Length: 225
Ligand SMILES: CC(C)(COP(=O)(O)OP(=O)(O)OC[C@H]1O[C@@H](n2cnc3c(N)ncnc32)[C@H](O)[C@@H]1OP(=O)(O)O)[C@@H](O)C(=O)NCCC(=O)NCCS
Image (tube, rainbow, N blue to C red; front, side, top):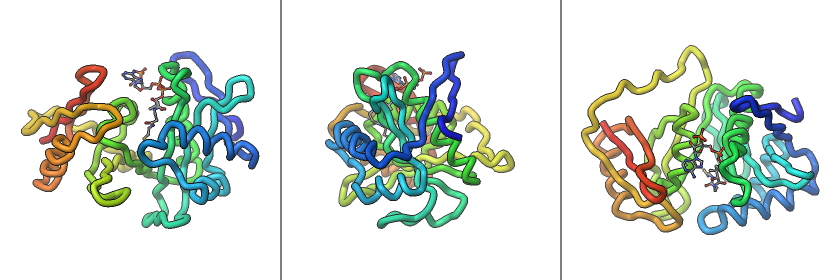
């Protein structure tokens, strides 16, 4: 299955499994460029993903302009507790190539290789201020499951997202319920501490996210019930 063909709106994307060690340098550079301000991947974890055959790239004119990563088994200091679960990392597209469905194709390719590896569940983490990533995953059927306040160190929190592929346990879309709480958040590179505290409080009082939408280019809204 190399390349993987992902079709979106009658357009086909050829996503490659990266099996060339020399490409690792370019993937690391892309990851550092896009995630360096927050949490770029370590060279060790990237190599583990590569060795597990979970590294996906999208090339234009033989140049890597997008990537995504799928970890199938525990590696480095990352523990995958349940064998049915894959962890998704690092979906990224160079800024000048965004908004052309490449990110979505890479995200769908992650799902495809996870299912092909027999996984029935995918987990990933996202900064709550990353509205575009959240809306993309939400539209692809991920649920926002929890808030992990110290995921990358003290106060460096992430939202945990989950998608089940197992048709027997597929999550039905949440019935539209009246939101009991709404949290608006400023999207961007800075942490929105006020929104993070509100999100933490909603999750700790047992509420779940039942809606998420962008309200402008720089703000988004979480609905909790
Ligand atoms: C997130 C990212 C990979 C999306 O890549 P992309 O190629 O620009 O995204 P796509 O064109 O495939 O769009 C996919 C979906 O994302 C959403 N989206 C993308 N850009 C958007 C924008 N500017 N405004 C609103 N929604 C947007 C839409 O839901 C879109 O689906 P639609 O076009 O069917 O409505 C890209 O923005 C990126 O590299 N960001 C930096 C790295 C990052 O934060 N990655 C996620 C880490 S978890």
